[in-house]
Amino acid sequence: MIIDSDSRSRYDAVQEEDDQPVYSRTSFKLEMEDLVRNSLPTFLTFLLQSSLLLIIPIYFAGKQGKDVLSASSMAITLFYITGPALVFGFCTAEDTLCSTAFGAKSYTKVGLYYQRCVLILHMMFIPIAILWVNSGPMLRCSKRYLLSQNKFRAPTMVLAGALPFSLIFHMAFKRFYLGPALSLVLTYWTISVLVVTYIYFDDHQCWNSDLRLSVLLQDWGQFSIGISGIVMVCAESFSFRVITLLSAKFGSVELASQTVVTTISMFLFQFPFSFGICSSVRLANYIGARSHNCVTVVRVATAATAVIGLINFSIMFFFRGWLPRIFTDDEEVIKYTSNLLRGVALNEFGDAVNAIFSSLLRGQGRQNIGSVLNLTAYYVIAIPLELLLGFYFEFGVPGLWAGLLLGELFLSAAESIPNVVYKLGQYYRKKPSPCVITLC
Image (cartoon, rainbow, N blue to C red):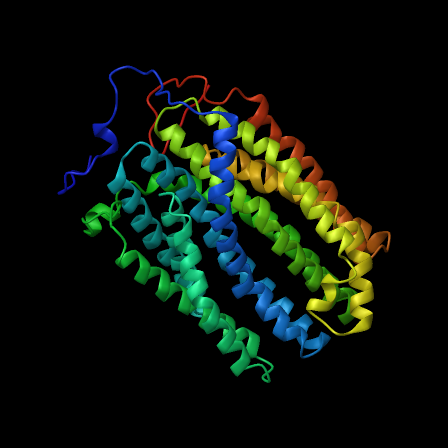
């Protein structure tokens, strides 16, 4: 055990002699109100993030024509699956470790997990840094560190501060072919500087003051769930982005339309994803506090999936004629995109279920279950069907999306089993720790 020099409460100091969970008063209504209240700033956070790192670059690229739009889409796709997706997957370990430790009042362990995660990520990215410089690890890991402490507004403030810089970068380089790429890199660095500055001036409640390497290099096995998180996230990300890569086979119009559809879908994904993140943090906090209220959180999150899925479907389906015009003035691309959105809208139901239920799995430390389900859904079902329907049966881009939809339907049904049928939180077989949670 590492002994801290400060007197703040540690996880080891708050354990009870008995194994009975801690109860506190809550209800379905109270949990729904809390999750909705916290989801709003979280939604703004991820909306700003997707705008800064995807929507704005695609918007300015689209104004230069469908060829630049297509090229920018391919570049962003390859950039994402070789960098940010790996970081995001590994940082799901913080959804479990930091949030559970915070719920157990082990405040300095929250900071210690964050610091270890940053160190591991930068060591992991040494090979990739040889090919391209990426400041994404610091950005995404720091955001998880703040969210685990229920500081849902902090990332929003940081990203809002970066927004004017992003617009300035894109306006300055809007006439250059590589303008979107250069602006994206500068935006990443701006956000990284701002988020580190925010943490520096934060209240430091959860900061670990012992930064010796002998301390930071201990217990990396706790992050083994981060490997499952990488598999879980990358399986989903690659399945979506392989559609963009395969769309290039059909021509520039199809690829440009696919880019617009993916951008719209990513925007709408922020609704269920934000709610899922807040549900994950809330669930892990209750697990760390040994409270049965985690059952209520799962029920609230399950009810929210249907509502959010219906809202997203309605936006994509009924505004399919107007949404493409935000990104392009090419009438051929607009027409193709509008027809494509008609079918892709059905995918929003599966997106809502998967975004929220996968977050609940991460809150329980069950990334291993999520990784197996995602690999099965996307690599055994979705991608083979995408290839079969898109190329063998010659349905084109709509066939690619149909294959993805069938894979997501399987995943939605499979993820409901450990989240709903499983009797979550009735009692613990042993005292929980922030890194190993055994539920019955």
